[in-house]
Length: 135
Image (cartoon, rainbow, N blue to C red; front, side, top):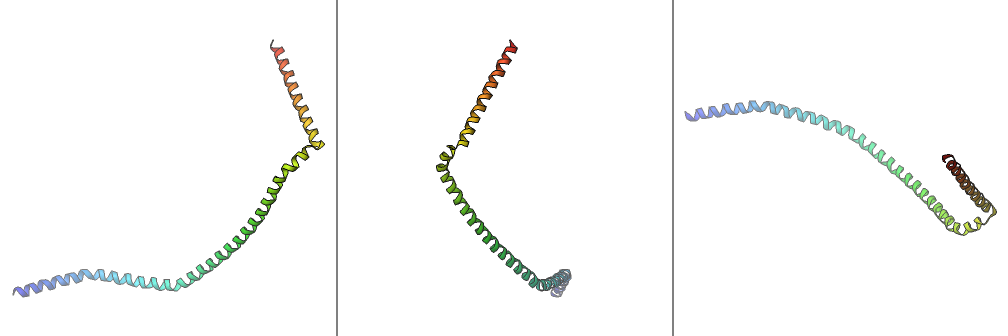
């Protein structure tokens, strides 16, 4: 008798657990169905994505090769112009004293000296007239 009642209680508990698990099992089934559709879509679009990615990689590689060649060309040109400029500056110390002895530079130097003298003269003259006015 007790065994029959215990089995009946166990069966009722088991049926209650199964009834509670039905929504959970339905949800798992829906998720697996959606996951299956997602995997199928991904398998269809993945080859196209990989092909596009491969084209992009090829374009980036070719662009980087072109940029690298251009940079090497510019580096060579700037190196040679740097050497030319360096030689010019080094030789300028030999050319400058000779160039300063030309008559044109002497005339410019004399004109600047006369201009400076005139500016000092005018400054003193104007200060003298200001001092006379103040007295």
